[in-house]
Image 1 (cartoon, one colour):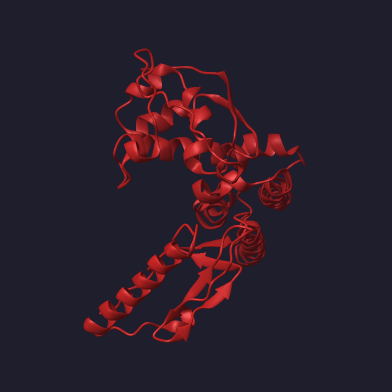
Image 2 (image 1 turned 60 degrees about the horizontal axis):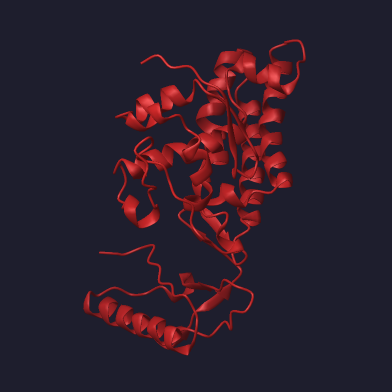
Length: 283
């Protein structure tokens, strides 16, 4: 028997809140002892958020919990500034290594197969859990991510002996979208799933629905501090509210995706804004 990926956290306003976390750690010690499980202290980390955080010490079984600036949680590197710069650096380096190995191993010169390889083995690394970190993207990091796809498409065009084209032309030929646009779509897909109870999240806990007969699923803006502007549940409000009301009656995520793909979207790299230019329906 084993347990993994346990997380405890507290909003540190005063010493009383710190005592709550200390108490929970003691309860965790008791639970692990009664269940015959050993806590691996060397894998335990404490990350502190906020510039005024006093960074109190925490202990498990009288062992000091190591402090860190970056922690990996379910494949995403979280830093103490919530900038996700370390995570972005990591996935960019990883995908470049994969591109090098794949182009070295696979000697094929068929564009269709090379695009399939990209979609299957490379792009997923650039898009894993984007709902968590894409809100923190600045222009520089957004450009760096897009540059990976630019590089790969340029390399496969050269390999296949095709006439060099602009990046947008290569995307059209390969039938793939810009990564920035796909991140915007991923946010909308997640919002749809949450609102239609396709996840374990309670939509009423994370969204405030406006009282609108015209658009019953229209979201109401929340008050937030500057640090919260990149939160998924904040940044998705404006893009979601810009969707035509016909979208809100769609019953399945598959149909929602199909109709959303018919819309020409212009997304800012930060993911904070989405402009609908044209849309076509075929109900």
